[in-house]
Length: 366
Image (cartoon, rainbow, N blue to C red; front, side):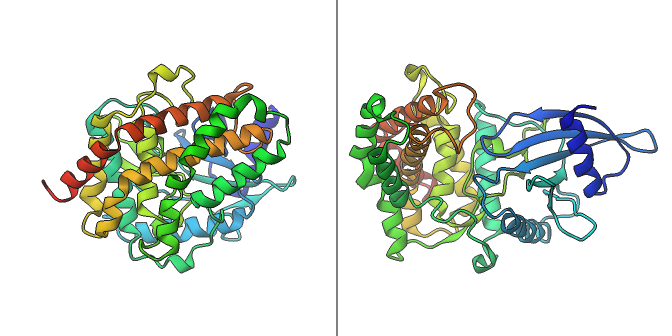
């Protein structure tokens, strides 16, 4: 038994998983937490799968608060969906907690393993429309959830204005001596700084409302039925907090409507696909239009551009400060990510009026 299997076996025991540990594999999706698919052979001979995840303590300083949020949100959703519909379920320890802490101080959780498929890059417009529907439905399921009951697990997570302030502070400090090599990227972010701060300013002035939002709406955070392509459940709830609907919409567009992966090194492959943009918009707005204000609908395109600029600055900031936040697969990975997002933001800027027209035509049936 290797060290990982021994650790996973201990975690399984804490969560009272039935049967005998059988096998495990590492799930590569996600830049933050460490995730495993584990199988247990039950006493009747059947094999049951679970997902065991170690929460990244560097990123999430208060894992217990995250899990309290998740408990409330998943129970609320479960109370609303029809019987038999798949929901995200977290296992509990003997003392009733949906997480445990190991001897090294790491936090762990166990959830149901849903037989499904995910997509990092997708060209199927029906799948993209269904992804939009899933995230829109998720937001509406929580529309009556009291946001005051949620811990703010990452303060100012999508406060683009503060994100950019921190970015330029780190540029000045240059802790790893990397700033000189990325001046073109820094200048690009500087040129878009004021525009990218507009949504934060609208929220600060009370012109757009805070809602319970997912805050990490990448398409690979939706599990789909392998045969029908229908959305099954939205996952990765670590960042569920009060937020802006336009940020949820925009982050999904940034990820799903890019013609390339978010870390594509060949920038000639990177652009905004307006067909994908329209498909996702149709799904998302079909679920949310009745609840959103005109200003929220009118700033959806701004949400997409804002989040893309914000993430570019976060990737570049992580590179400048020593690659501590996002998991990287090779040296310079965060710089590749930042350049990819900046290229996408530039293309969004060129297509901004078209994006606005598409949203308006869907929301108001023009």
